[in-house]
Length: 310
Image (cartoon, rainbow, N blue to C red):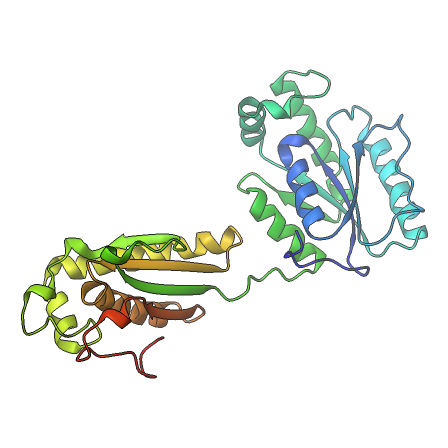
């Protein structure tokens, strides 16, 4: 994906030892996204190791150890020869990386994912025992060991990026808070839409009707009701919960729309209160507040000023 930060010609060269259940496909996808040139094959001592002369950095060789039944010492010797070939080809900083998982996790992955059938048709228990035997035997010969038992694909991507020296710190997250009126339509570009029409409406207080949620008397009225404060607390909790997950999925922006009937009182007061919370609790977030129906407000209503988030 072009948006992913990339490794470069000075990044480590990886030889990855893994099986389908320990994260082989995850590693393939992660290293591809990091800009690595990938060569994948079964690790069998009867099969020639990949030709290294034509490989260009950054390069990664993914070796599926599912079919290996040779003595670990012979496997280690073959890997040592491969390392020397890669270094002789001018590829930088060759690292042997093994992926593993606990026996329970391997069994669960093989049992529940039909795409992980063993190429030799072994039963799950035999397969897991063989994997654990080999991966433990090769431990002294590997530079890195990553246990994927508690990982998902995104976690392994982050780990491999760190080993490759690639900074994948996400860009600043951007939230747009948008107040709106349902009578003028629901915003089409908002990921999250919250309906504030369940709260008491200042519109029915004649002295408050001409003003907006930016005016202190309107905001005080809205939050004089316990359900309004509870509504705001639920919004705050949901934002704090969901933003890290949006970031983890690769999103960099989120539009949160809060609506009331006309987009003048309740939604505006809530948007401003939520903005204050986000600015205090999540200072790393870029925040914009927009009041879509401002042109419909009476002229007496307060308008955003430089002191308000806009």
